[in-house]
Length: 401
Image (cartoon, rainbow, N blue to C red; front, top):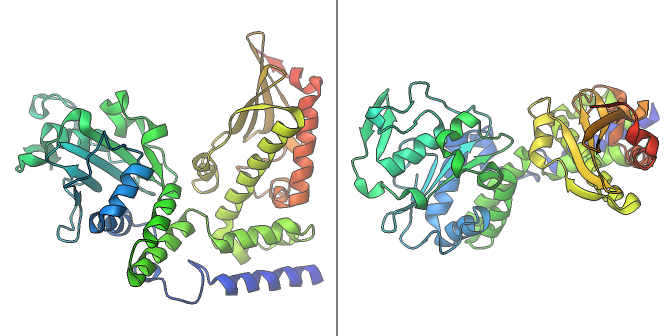
């Protein structure tokens, strides 16, 4: 009882200190006016305003966030839509950066939670010059490069021909929180749209906003900082979440109390799970390198973890590495933790010990999974996993095919 009271008192103190949604006692104008996930009316509009307001903001965004070099896109005489004067998107394109003189364009589709818009009647035909207008990305691309846009099941010509740009000078990006662009929305652009390069996560937007706050007058810098606070909140990267996660993680007695009192922090529970999984794979990767000299090939990224914690997806989370020349994978899914290995053109797999196997990141409602939040338990589990990986018997146990 004493431990429960102590935990809840500390949790209350954290909540008071950070005041939720951005920290401090000050009013965050974005929290007052918006819920935080409005793609068009909030995020696209504010980002486009920043880009059109200050040429240095535009330069930092294109060069550092989109990673488009000077030789590929000329920022002189650029226009950004929407902007302070034209507040409506051009042809439904969330963000359009265009250099009409050079016939260059950057098209950005902004997706937080909404599904991709697919037009089933947008297939190639004579009316649209045999271009596909089904998926959002391909639809916007052909609007700018072919000069036709789709409206109410009709294809209309762009009246201002100065907006038509060259195909090889038109760049397409997908700005998102946790989503991947669907195959349908990419459509015919698959020959040059690479999701690993052209999908921009809101985590990267934070870096850009940090740079912008240092290049403006105090009042406007404060507004940008408030928007940055909002972005940190929706991307799980805020001080309150970290403080609650650390409170549960650092005291052996608190994890069970937290497990039984989830309602006390249910508004950030998804974010706590995200940080727990991220910490687990970060620490496991480090220990694999140090303890058994593993060569790491890939680890779960922020987006794949968010699919499990925020979108409730049945996503596999795995580390790929080699040990003693053998390719291995540690996989966590609805079956728990498994280890697979490729040996002499065969794939072998087997389970870890039960206490490891029963940890399923897709289900934090079971105690063995929730307990991984605790620092000492997580360290113990990782140590046991590495010992079993280094033991030949697990490498060859199970079924081979």
